[in-house]
Length: 154
Length: 154
DNA sequence: GCGATTATCTCGCCGAGTAAGAGAATCATG
DNA sequence: CATGATTCTCTTACTCGGCGAGATAATCGC
Image (cartoon, rainbow over all chains, first blue to last red; front, side, top):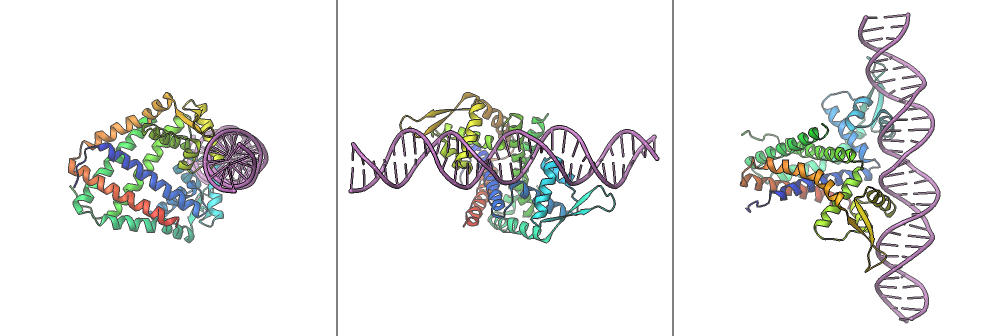
């Protein structure tokens, strides 16, 4: 195996990977008639659904950094696409619960399913120790970016 | 160090890292009065400048998947911000060369500089063999995403 | 009860990006 | 050369996602 003389190569790889993943998402989104924001919302909704967490327009908007007007528009689009359904929360009737429809699950499966399978397949080319090294590396890099982000916004 | 029982954890790490990097870019952009697209354009322009490649509106628009009208608007914004300058190409006077101003370099330095330094710093916690493993891992994952992208658009 | 707070939605607007096409320069072919 | 096709950029008119301000409705606290 070759030596790494230039850690800068790793920095460019990280950037390149981000670009590829973003493009993958953007292309999947436009193929399915939704906007990048809609896809981000779908991912958030599916994650929350799997974790058993109730999502409201307020929480969704906060997660995506949208204000309430933009959030209403987003929820309208997702509802019109048949991906989610609005349901008044009977406990607190000011709230609206965003219920994920089956169609959203299928769409998510179409987006993640294939790619995740391919990624896991490629990981089989690495030994347990190597995967552990990759994990620690990714955690370290993520931590650095998260810290820089917090430092940037004071 | 711990064993990796769940390669899925690596998939989530990859996604999390992408999200963090995107947020970092979006926040940097809005702090400096530019849009995410403007930052993407800036990155492309600085890369090309360092490589000594001439960038025209056409090439820039193609790189960012914008049509010619959107590209004109983008170049107008960047020019108004004092980041680039339009110059007619004397060889082929249909073309416009986008010349990067010093201010763009400084902005790029502000964006990359700190983060890259931090990333390189964190990499010093890994041995040469580990960095090589990380490199191969990132290359493999990037390859998978790129292949999935090509497969998706037929 | 009643004012303060919380959650969502409505209205009017801005501006990034698109589609269609005009204008200007260059290339290719007879 | 000349002239028609091509290339590159810009203009016009429009769409639509997102924002600011504020209305509406339900809940909480004293």
